[in-house]
Image 1 (cartoon, rainbow, N blue to C red):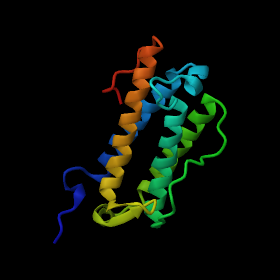
Image 2 (cartoon, helix red, strand yellow):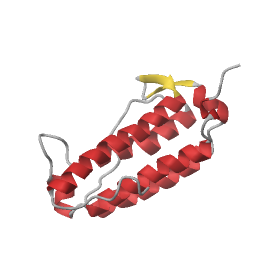
Image 3 (spheres, rainbow, N blue to C red):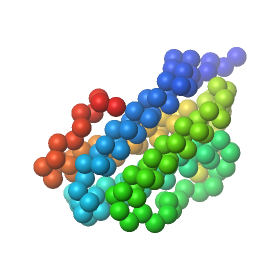
Length: 159
């Protein structure tokens, strides 16, 4: 019998962990001045609105794809978001979608291999951990941007 990936952490605790990171990322978005959210970058990196677009096109859509076993290609088409408030609203909607879809995962699903976006064939638990890792990575870029703008980012442990 296979050992379940959730043996060390419950699905509920993993969701709480992920949503803690999402809450922190939301606070980083809030701190950006409107203009800088869309225009500021360092060293050729994407703007934080660009990074946030990626996060919005992965988290909820990818979890939904896992639930529906849909291996449709990755797309950053998340609709037209023109203001930081639009991004925050979309972030909140995605958070609720994640909460709703999370309950559709079974304990057995976490070890099942799934070809996410038709190109990432891994156990579902590894895809979910990637969502979290990717968000932490991009939030770190946001921290660098905020510091360069003279804005203190929130403490990383305050999730």
